[in-house]
Each structure stands twice: as structure tokens, then as C-alpha cells.
Amino acid sequence: MLEDIPPIAGTYLLVFQSDKQVMVNVGRRGSLELVPGYYFYVGSAFGSGGLRARIRHHQGVSKKPHWHLDYIRPHLLLRELWYSTDNIKCEHAWSDRLYYTIKLQIPMPGLGSSDCKCESHFFYSEVYPDVFGIRGSLDNNNLEHIVVTN
Image (cartoon, rainbow, N blue to C red; front, top):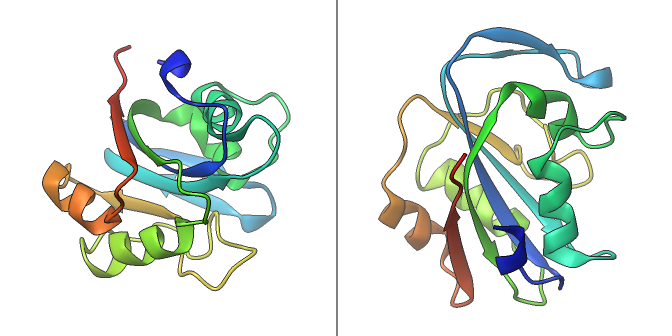
């Protein structure tokens, strides 16, 4: 899977699944109750290693949590990812569209978006939304989609 992702800058959407209910400590943000369903995390990778390095980080479990998602990741199963190699950050537009267009829920306001004005970069849905709805809401010509097989 990772070999298909280019080591260049871009924006990504990770889709996770949880089949259990668990309380997770998200560092200084406090506690978050994960419930069964689907979780969506939007981010950008404009640093060293680009998309491949950032997605590799989020694919695994971090021993020293850095991002909000690092605290939650051990409790989620990565199911698929979407990414764009546009040279502009799309994470804010994607987050707004997932929230306002697809109507995904925000399990913890500000999670993943402490450095911007977005409501959140982390979303929840009890059921998986329509793939065409996701593709349409991300609205990007350079959009790639990968289903993760575990």
C-alpha cells in the first residue's frame, strides 16, 4: 500500500473503523469516548517525506504521541485512505465539506485542528457514508483512493 503513495506533498483523508466502545485520553485535550462506527481524519503532509511518510506514521501506532490522532490510533483500524497531490493544502476545505456537506459528526471539537479555525479535522459516522458522496465532497482532480486490506 505505502509503495503506491508518492513521497511528495499533499492532503489526505484517513478512514478508520472501531468495533468497540472505549475511553481514550487525548493528551491535554482530555478524554474522548470512541464508540463503534467510522472515524475520519483529515491532514496535510507538506514536510519531509510528504504523503508517504505521514501516512506511514498514521498507519502504525506511535510510542511517543505527537498529533491528536496518535493518542486515538491504537483503538482504530485503518480501512481506507484518500489523498491528493495538489501543491495547496486542501485539509480545511475537505474538513468543512465533510462536516457541512456529508454531515459527519464531531466527536471532540478542535481535534486535529488546533492550529486553524476549522470545527475539527476528526469526524464520526455510525455508518459508512456513500463513497461517491466522499469523492464529490472532496472535489479534487488529483484525488486517489486506496482500500486497506488487513
